Image (cartoon, rainbow, N blue to C red; front, side):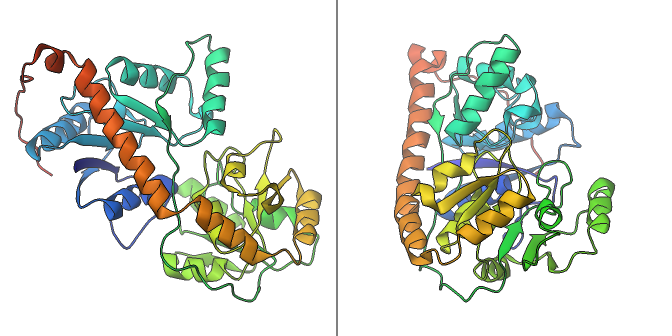
Amino acid sequence: MRIALPYNTHFGRYDTERVVGGIEKFCHQINDTFDDVYIINIDNNDSIKYNTAKIKNFAKKINADIIISNWPQGSFSGAKMLNSEVPIMFINHTHGGVGGSILGLMKNIMNKNHSCYMVSEWQHNQYKLLANIKNADDVVIDGYINSSYVIGDKPELLNIEYDCGTIGRCDPVEKKPFIMKDWLRSYDWQTVVITNTPIYEKELKYLDKNSHWNNILLDMNHEDVMKTLSKCGTYFSSMWNETWGITALEALSHGIPLILNTKNGEHASIDLCAKESFYKLVTDGVETHDAIVSFEGIDRKEIQDATWDKHSYEKWKTSFINDIDRTIEKYKKQNIYYIMGEEPKYVWRNSNL
């Protein structure tokens, strides 16, 4: 199976040694899982016309079976992409707060016989609410795809050095990793924030504003992030509208219970937990403090074992391959060229990758 994988270079070109966010990590997982994956670095500063031609031409050049698109921007999934002669599997990782335009995007994808997936039922419900507010059509998709999995040997359960930890991009609008520090400022807990050194002014100001906290770890490689995470007694998910929660799964895989920031009594990462006892929902510092207390002495081995059973790599890969096969078959069955038994006509343009 030959996969064309457009990659958003907002945080830098595809780099096997550097992963910034959840969507970027998902792309890495695809590249690690399949043999014939072709990365197409896409710069959103270039025009949509240029980028879509670049993706479609390269997919045709390599005789791709499928294009897997993970960003909702026009360069990746917009109207100019949808006349692609290679089936597109669009995976929406974003929450409903991104705006109503994505509703039309998903509808167009489905109408053009490509496929549209989301990463959680919670996320789907947020888009249904958005559609209702916008008086738009119901949000129809092809299914859900888990954002990650566990693989390899189970990590050692290390002695706890931090009562609570969080991992997140240095983002003052959505991720807000320092909210944990702020909420627990009146308590004597040992906490750690693992984040990145940002490149944009707004994020830099946010980091500077929070530089007085202790135990702020910047720009660690993934191995060191996991070693630090394994020493946390609890994991704090700071983003209330997270659509899945890759770092939450990483915490569970280390036997660490979740503390989930919520605004509506819900959180997408609830579905990651094999048991209800593996998480607590919180809305403020008092509830976060109480959650840390409640998890003292919890059976970390039970959390780890149940997580590895629920989220094994083998289960994820089998399900993902089935979704790819369904995308290709759906496109072939419904696309007019295949119905007529004709080869699609294609106008070739050179693409400088």
